[in-house]
Image (cartoon, rainbow, N blue to C red; front, side, top):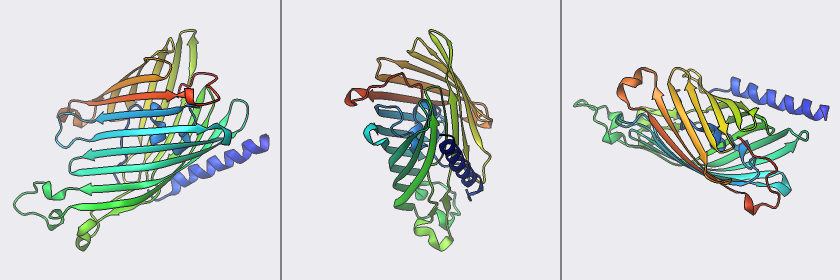
Length: 314
C-alpha cells in the first residue's frame, strides 16, 4: 500500500509539473460560480465519482446589462460503471459572448483506483470537437474599417483532448486538470492577415473539505484556481453550509473580480436546484448588473445495483 501511494504521489507531482511548465492569453474557458456541482465540465476524472448517474443543466448569464455579455448553457451527464471501476460522461456547452459563438461536445472517461478503504484516485481523459464562430462582420468598427474585420472567422469541428486527476474520500477532494490540451489557432478566412487569435490551454487546480459542525450542520470550504499564460491566475474561494442535509447556503470570493451568493436546495434525495448571483467588485461594476447562474441536478441512483452508502457532498 505504501508503494502504491508513493507511485500515486509521483504521478500527481509529474502532472502538476506539466501544468506549470507547459506553454499556456486571456481566459477563454467558460466561467462557473457553482463549479463545485459542475466539476465534470472542467475535470474529466470526476466522471462517475458520485456513484450515481448524474444529469446537470446549467444556465449562466454573466454581466447582465452589458452589451455582448457572456451567456453559457451547459448540459452534462456522467455515470459510474462500478463493475469495471470506470466512469463515463458527456458534456455539451454553448458559450457565447459578443460576436463569438462557441459550441463544445466532449466525451469523458475515468478510471478509479482504490488506494485504501476511504481514499480513491480517479484518472480521466476527454476527447471531443469544438466549433468556433466569430461574426466579425457584424461589428461596427467605424468608417475606416480594418480588412481583418471584413470576414467572419469560422473553425468547424476542431479536435479537443483533455486530462485530469481527482483524489477523494467522503470528506475531501483534490483535483488537477487540463480540459483543453490542443491549442487552436483562429484565422479562418483571414489567413492573409495572420492569425486573429488562438485558444490556449487552461489549467485548473481544485480542492474542498466537509466539516461536521453538529448533527444538522456541515461546513464545506472549497477553492478552484484557473491558470493561463498572458493573464493572472484566477481563484474562487467558497464557503458553504449544509443545513439538515437539504439546504446549501454560501458565498464565493473571486479574487479581484466578484463576490457571489449561492443557494441550493435538495427537493428530494435525487433532485437539487441552485442559484447564484455575482456582484462585480472590479471596475466592470460600473457597467453591469451582476451575473446569474441557475443549475438543475438529478441523480438516477435507482439504476445502479450498488446504492450509495453515504451522501456525497461534492
